[in-house]
Image 1 (cartoon, helix red, strand yellow):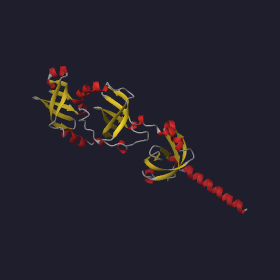
Image 2 (tube, helix red, strand yellow):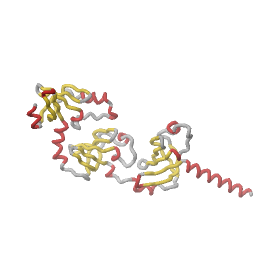
Image 3 (cartoon, helix red, strand yellow):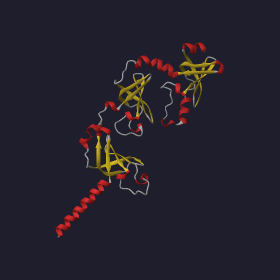
Image 4 (cartoon, one colour):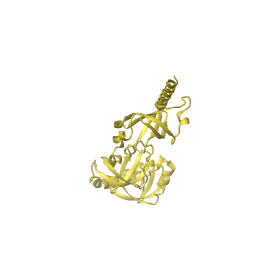
Length: 277
C-alpha cells in the first residue's frame, strides 16, 4: 500500500459499505475509505435540497461496484487508507480540458440541478453554470427554468484545474439592452408578483423583464405584514417610476398610480364646477 501511495498508482477497489461520509472499499485484503468529496462527478450524490436521507440512499446504491481510484493517503500505524476517485478523474480530464479555452462556446446537456446552479456535460467533461449565469432575469430556483436532460449552449467563463465554469446567458442577448423599446417611465403596467420580501415585491412584467416595487410605493395597510396582504401569483397594476438598463433595474409604484388618479379626479370635478358656474 505504501508503494502504491508513493507512486500514486491507480488501483481497482470494490465498494463494500456506505455511510453519510462516503464509501468503504476493499482493495485486496485491505479496507479503505472514499470520502464523498473524493468521488467523481459521475458518482457524487447531487441531491436537490441536500436531503441527507436521499444522499445516503444514493451512496448505498454503489455497494458492490468496482471503482478505479488513486491512493490518496496511507498510514499503516493509524490503520488509515484513503482512496480518491476524483483525483484519477481529474488526471484523465487534463488532456481533454486542454482542448478548450475561456470564451469557447460548447453544446451539452443538463446533468444535475442544485440550489446554486446547474451542471452541464459536454464532450466527456462537466461544467457548472452558477444560478446568476443561467438567465438574465432574476431566478430563485434553477429548476424553474431548466430540466435534467435539457440540451443547452453555454460559454466557458473560467477553467480552474478540473473545474469548468460556464454561462448560458452569455450566449443570449441581454433583454435589458432593449427594455426602453418596450417600457417607458410613466407607463402604467400590470405584472405578476414573483416574490414578496420585507422590503417590497419582485414583479414579472414579461418573462424577461422583472421590476421592483418598494414597500414605500405600495398601497397596503402598514400595520399588517406585507406577506399577509400580497401573495406570489397576484396580479397588480403599477406606474413605472424609473428604468436603469445598465443595472437591470425597473422601479414600480402603486402610490404614484393612485395619486395620478386622484389628481385626475380633482381636475374632472373642477371642470364640472366651472361648467356649472
